[in-house]
Image (cartoon, rainbow, N blue to C red; front, side):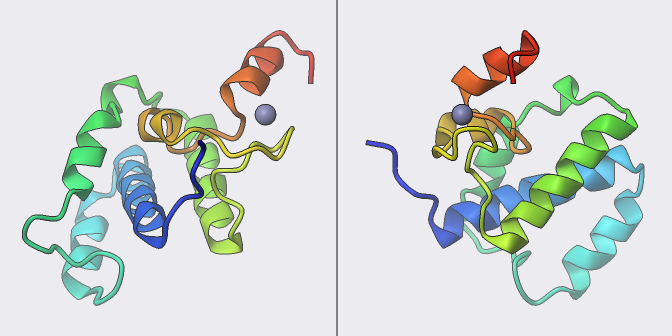
Length: 120
Ligand SMILES: [Zn+2]
């Protein structure tokens, strides 16, 4: 039922995270440079759905603080390490719907609830 994230999914989440990272560090100009210069990962293909994903990721909910930025940096590191999308507690795949809403989520919903009650 739970499908592993595809390379395209990972690209999409990496894209969202990179944009959120740039927004949080208040550095949109650098992001635009990256978009212009990069020839991998950031190409803007007509009909690409990544913007759709990105819109679901509600930036209004982002807290402009170091904690969120750190979570985003760690999520990007997990993409590089190949363990992005796995719950850090139970090692189960985090639902894609959850990652769309919170791309830097480190726990599945069950474990997140436990974490909020300090049970982990
Ligand atoms: Zn879990």
